[in-house]
Amino acid sequence: MSTLARRRQSPSENRKFVIVPSSPALQKSSERLCSSPPENTLIYLEPTVHLLSSMTHSHQNNREANHAQNDPAISQADPVATNHPFVRHEMQTLDCREEYDEDYLVPFTMDTVSCFKPSVYQSPLMPPENKPLETRILKKVKDVLFEVDIKTMAMHITKVDCMVARILDTSDDMMKGMGVSSGLELLTLPHGHHLRQDLLERFHTMSIMLAVQLLGCTGSADERATLLHRAICLASELKSSLGNLFGFATVMKCLELPQIARLDETWTVLRQKYTESAVLYEKTLRPSIWTMNDGEEISRPTDTTFPHVLPLLSLLERNVVALEESESWESADTGVAMVSHLDAARTIACNGRIFSANAEAKLQGNGNF
Image 1: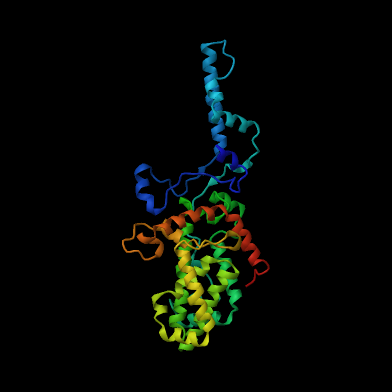
Image 2 (image 1 turned 90 degrees about the vertical axis):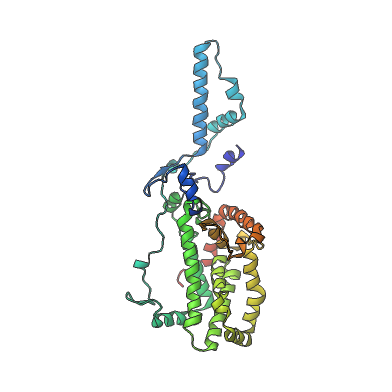
């Protein structure tokens, strides 16, 4: 009951609670219990306190009517009903209840498609007609990675990451449709399936794009070492200056790919020409991503724009139990890491407004990069 009393003052006071089809990992069991609603179904919601109040007073009125018919001398309500702490609390809530939003009852819509639309995507680097992995286009991308300032590149990546995750540029209508005030809360809920898929899609495609540049678009070991140096600097900028741990993990995923780790000559040149970057990667960045994946390094919300959610996304979107674990948080020997990531999800969901404010502050005055 204390939770109900506090809900009006909580940041998520306009949250709409619904029962929706669960994530793919639980769909088989849910199908046996109930059938999924059609894609265009609108689920109307009402505050829990309103429902409890109406149910309680309806029950009380029925009991009073029955007592009055059976014994006219009874002029007060059923003491069992009025003295029950649950009922007494609801009666007080009805009398001193704050006014709720008039448009609290809004249609709840579930995302059924991805926010990415490759068929209509346009880029100044690519003509409308282009072949996959076309050398000319890949060279343009490589030139951008070489020429653009690292800070500018990191801020652009952070802005797009936050827009995809619905941390930035989230309208009131979008929040009403989601049922929550932040995409970071939505991705922890069953109906956040498509948002989780979009974030995983961006994570994998970004890391692969960087890997393709390192592997296929540079001629000499010196060029590859320079691009590797810039990638390390980009990862450091994303983590330290902008607090974008999602973007940081994306770049680190690329640098830790087996195809990149096997470039012995490139890493040797990196250590010779860019010693500080090599030391930064070996002593700071790589241990940091390991501890983050193991759930041992928890970032503070006040310093973060986009928290480390990749383990959570993988756990919630995993269809079957992996027999051969490919990630540290999926290993049976590190089950505590899984619990740590699930526990961190609660903190992430509750601090959505803080992350949004941090992102706006970090990107303020830098909208054109």
